[in-house]
Length: 160
Ligand code: FES
Image 1 (cartoon, helix red, strand yellow):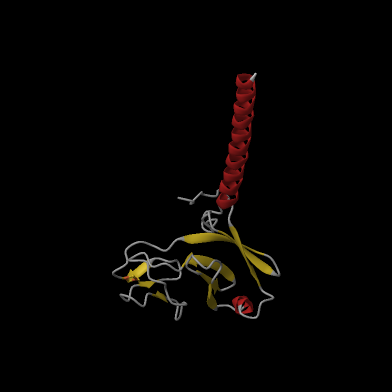
Image 2 (cartoon, rainbow, N blue to C red; image 1 turned 90 degrees about the vertical axis):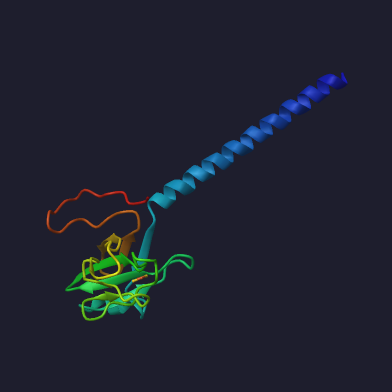
């Protein structure tokens, strides 16, 4: 009789463990999917962000404490978003001025397309897709911008 009780107890313990693992697995999967579609919203209602409505203005937008801010830049009405992490050794870049983004560490410079025009950086900055409404921007951290030259609507996954 005791042996039967033990078997039943063991069976119930295993069932509870499997159910718990299943729930954890679902949670991890859901978080992963959310991460793939990470979107940062920048409201023009905020005083600081409202400068982006002016042509030529730019700002560093801090969207998470642990990650480097984004460089958000109004280039003749087209607002673009770049990583603020220098492609040389990862220093935080300055706010763009005079059409250039400068690195304070070793003086690399990037043009308005994020392409290095002065070393030591050799790789372009990561740029993100931006969608604009009247009141806000949505920056898609896992997608490259839609090419204006080709008019391509194809989006590329850049999560890696
Ligand atoms: S880290 Fe930017 S130039 Fe070296």
